[in-house]
Image (tube, rainbow, N blue to C red):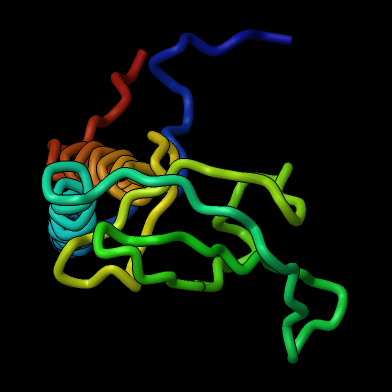
Length: 158
């Protein structure tokens, strides 16, 4: 069995498109990168609003509610008091709270003075998760789009 030199390796289906198709795909990936970056910017701006203007307090899980569409899934109802002493009870989605949430558990949160009914858990994951995912998706799309813009390599004939 004769081994072929590395220059004869197949580069895969991504590199077998015509130059026009490659540029078209590159434009699509670069547009997706731009959209992901714009969405990340929006989510980061929302997180910065909670970090800079948000008020820190503790919220207590007062009840575990059951979702109407999925009876097996429970989510916590958080109760906290704002600066004026008014009590607010807000539901949290099942995928947006710490797993240790039980009735009576207390968690640090941030709420906005202008809209005290809106709150977020005061931790890095809750405040920055969506924005950081968008940055990584954007970087991936930028790399793929940039690779597609490179000229097609043709293997050398031996």
